[in-house]
Amino acid sequence: MNITITPTETAGVSRRLQITVPAETVATYEDQAARKYATQVRLPGFRPGKAPPSMVRKKFPEAVRQEAIEIVINEAFRTAIEREGLKLAAQPHVHDLKAEPGQPLEFELHCEVRPELALEQIDGFTLTRRDAAVTDALVEEQIERIREQKAEWTPVEEKAAPGDMVTVLLSTADADGTLPEGKEYRIVLGGGQAIAGIEELIMETVPGGTTERSVRWPDDFPDESQRGVAKLVRVVVKDVKRKSLPVLDDTFAREVGDFDTIDALREAVRTDMAEQSKREADADVRGQLIQQIVTTNPFDVPKAWVMQLVDGYMQMYGVPEAQKQTFAKEFMPMAENQVRRDLIIDTLAERESLQASAADVDARVETLAKARNADPGQVYAQLQKQGRLQEIEREITEERVFTWLLEKNTVTAA
Picture (tube, rainbow, N blue to C red):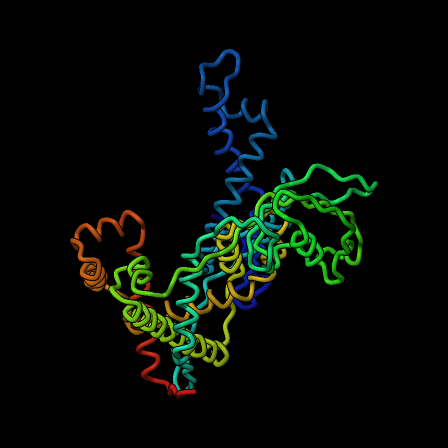
């Protein structure tokens, strides 16, 4: 395609190209657009799709012109990307389009290209490994959390106390002082689910009873307009339930899982916590390493990739539309770090031939199947159906890259 390309900006991964298409070239595409449009319209005296392009062009000048402009832009875009040898990171954008009849077509193409990482220094770094000891106290805390999960809630016929679960009808006076119909809430007292003044009101009320009193909203209430405001509140306590924790004995251990004794449960918890501590220490060391590589080998990342990751986070967490802008601002640094990390891993995996092979994935699946006491073929088919084989491939590749990197750097204990 006959076009003129003038780079107007080259900064990091950002590229801007001024594109000019001669008027005579645009005219040829108008003829092409007219022939294409002729197959879609019907004119009196002609069979469907048989009207002369010149007549179609005369009858539908704006539609043909718009069709031609779209074709020209697409062709010019492809030609420009090919000539400039750009490896795009995302779909480019057209800006400042000028498309007057009989004049050259002009526009500026804004692109982001895939970054090319040199990574000239990836060794000589010192990393600190922080292994957290799994103490008896930590094990007992985890046992208590399990015990809390197995707790039973028993109704009581007395006023609620901190830690009790209550079902209440709660109503707060409107601006004119009237109390609307109460809404039902289930609250665990002392858990910060209600402001202190309302919890006090609840604990003064017997099950089945009603209490009505003015309550002052705290000075640190999230809604600034409500801070320090006193409102009439009515509480109807429908029921009070008290938590009953199971006895820590062998019976409890058997209810939790395949453990014959409480000591066996404690040992399993200790092992799990030690493995989790190791994973966290490994992740921390890897994070330090990536950060030092980025600091020593700075590079830009495409904003489109960062925003794609942010959008993924928002979908995962179900962020409401009204909160998306705030969420994106807060998660942008995290997403950018993740993009940099992925780029470093991909670059080194390709450069040093560390990518996981199909045989590696098969071996990992076989290991998983053995741990589950399942047939490897069935496990493979299940993972394939779930779309997780690529995830396993990525996991193996990352392990290889970090193993290779850590051999070139120093890790010291905290």
